[in-house]
Length: 226
Image (spheres, rainbow, N blue to C red):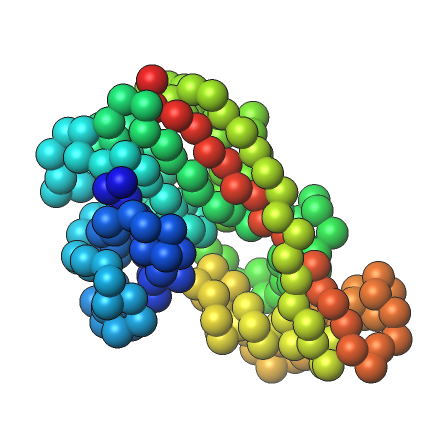
């Protein structure tokens, strides 16, 4: 099976595809990520590219994955259209997206605290919502519009095991694109207030510790090229 892993990042999904026996091509726009992926997954081929303008012929792949990549792309429908173009009839697409703030978990704790205590002068540029494509009411019509059917949606219960209830603040500040862009520029008093609000939510929802399992659920949506 020929598999394409879009927005492959450090190669986590690519590695699982290789392990499953696929011939894997990973694509990312970041040379730094590709360097990590090449070292981590020598059994795959990695290329630099734009997920909205794929340099592959029509019907080149049997399967296509996007691991948490759609929230970082300004025009997800263009990515889905390109995915359908390079998939053979009957091929499968699967992509993962973090659940949004409406689901109990770290995403809502941190971004809710930013909304309540963040500086009003710091905002993200216009773009799609980080969790839009976790919603089947958004994802399914977008997939159907470009030639996919037979949809499924699975919630994956994942979480962070931490011994500091403020750790999700640092995780988002230091390890994510959107969260980092909102948290790193915060004035010190705003940052302290955001972190304190995250701590309070975790204590209220998950007890007094000394360790906490902080939910970070995700959705995997899949469909077939028809």
